[in-house]
Image (cartoon, rainbow, N blue to C red):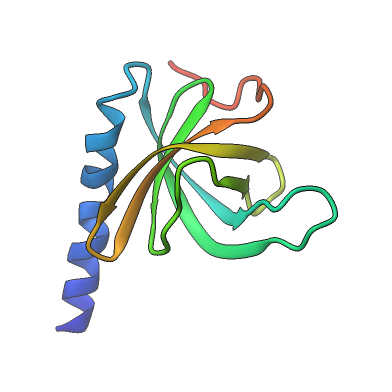
Length: 118
């Protein structure tokens, strides 16, 4: 039974992020796994949130859900496991749900070609 409940909760994640994506007209579904950590600035230790999935993206924002709370203007670092994607972003929107926080974060610097539409 616990596995079924976990699967159901994970299945709801894209739907929750999709609700926030409606406020970002350029948002495209992407499903990119990344490691997420809090960015404390140069020379300061970062705290890790672990792995999450970028569910939607725009040329300048990422939208995802995590188990930990984040707040408006928090800075985060997103990194792919293979190192091909590494970007710092600032939280611009937050929706709190039971045990989940849905976040939209805007890149602090231009990240060219990170999202390619077909």
